[in-house]
Length: 445
Image 1 (tube, rainbow, N blue to C red):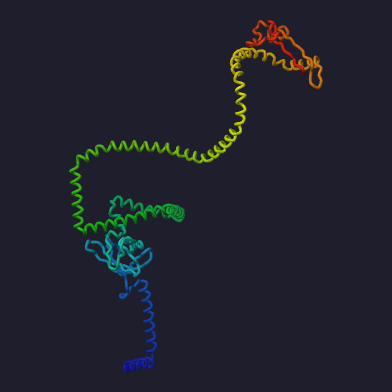
Image 2 (image 1 turned 120 degrees about the vertical axis):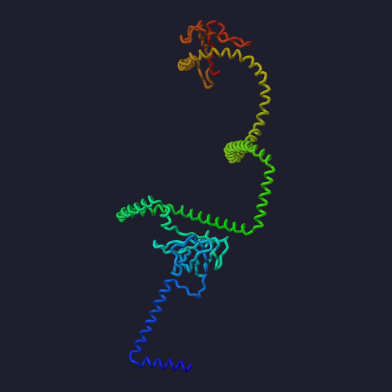
């Protein structure tokens, strides 16, 4: 330790005392510091990973890996964020490209994850983007190998052109040349077209989301089918048992072929009957809906109707109670009127015959009602002396056929005297053939 200090002391002494050596030493130290800073920046931009760092490494098989240059900082992204790099590339046992991906620790990947190799620029600078997947798939650990069913590779332009015939290639070349000519006026025409494209893209965004969701479901289905296939292929005993059970089922089915044929022969009739039943049920349901609606409407109005009926019943009960004394009092009156009703039934036919001839007389007298009223008033005023109790005199006014107006006709044109009912005395004024009316103008007394 003492010898080292002495050597360092002699070095410092030499640098301090020898002319120009101190300046050269400071320049060399500064250059070394600058080189260290520049190297650190370069290594940081190149995403340098120290050998002793803890990394999460997985392997993925791709059908092809064009443009891959391991160790040059080609990225591995999750949700667009750089989380690692491609550290190695080799050819797998099945002749497929196998890439080793080094990721930062802390990221969870599942067996249904999807790895896609994409170009970063038109120069074919590649990177790998990872969709980590999700449960119910199992989480993978460092060193897991993703099969080719979990990966996708980009389609190269030369692969597309190689599938075209020479004529198509020439037409494509012509199309590119025409596109170059068309893009000369792009500054004036392209903005409006881009605006329209953006509008269309916004309208198609829900469709793209649904397609992406369906794509994810299909990917999960394929992964699950692959796992099922691997599980079935790895269990030969269970697979043999499944095949044996299937063979036994088919043999039993073949032994009952006549019964199956009869069943299939009866199936069309059953289907036709089922169709008729379904049609009838549909018709019944179509008629049942209006009935149920009417029933619901009636049930809504029924409480009010019952309430009104109850009020009516209460009023009817009161009316019946009130009519009880009247009915008891009317019983004797009805008993007294019964003999009169019997005689009235006998007199009604003759009364009908008599009243039938009154219509023409009444029609003839209607225009002279005013004159008859005036005549009556004037005659009363002449022939009656009145006091507080009314008139005391009476007058007889005989009227015969000759005194009637011409509109009433004569005794020979169909006007006949009114016959008297049987058992009644005819008035003296109607005994004469010419007498039509004979009345008494009453006075007061």
